[in-house]
Length: 213
Image 1 (cartoon, rainbow, N blue to C red):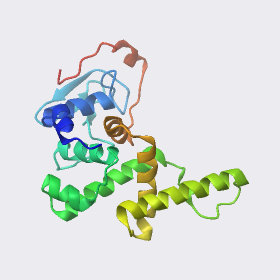
Image 2 (image 1 turned 30 degrees about the horizontal axis):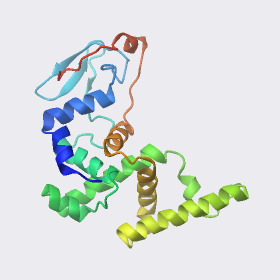
Image 3 (image 1 turned 120 degrees about the vertical axis):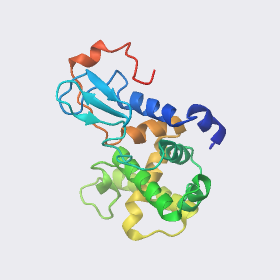
Image 4 (image 1 turned 120 degrees about the horizontal axis):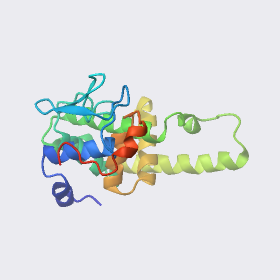
């Protein structure tokens, strides 16, 4: 169920979004993605975190579908929230709600679907391919049932789609069927593709407070 009021209460401004992204990326405190060091300094003017050891600069969006985005973070999180709510989410509706042009909204939605693909189908897309040899009969029947449900979902929400984009819509169906909580969906989509190297230092930061606290 989509509730714009609940979203605004949870993410009232960009600062709240940055703080949320930080804690999703590094729940036990910052860890350098290159060397694993936990000590860092904050470049507040650019919203970057610089490793005290190797001087690598990292942002809360690096390695995610939001990397180097020029859109406000609230736009991204709202789109994640919308998709995770189970309500039909189209580029035209996003453009109208966020006051974006259609091409920008379409690109935003494509990137969100790509995050869904990475979150749920990394290396598993072969399951959806037709006539895949090697599956036992019971798996084939389960596959056909899932494919039918996915096809019904696509027809219900999007009617016709380009064949080259088919895997993206299958990914959306699978993601929505598993992640029914909008806030949990946001966390999953943020974490998709965002890698962090953890070391023994992370266990010393259980009571850590982030730079925005």
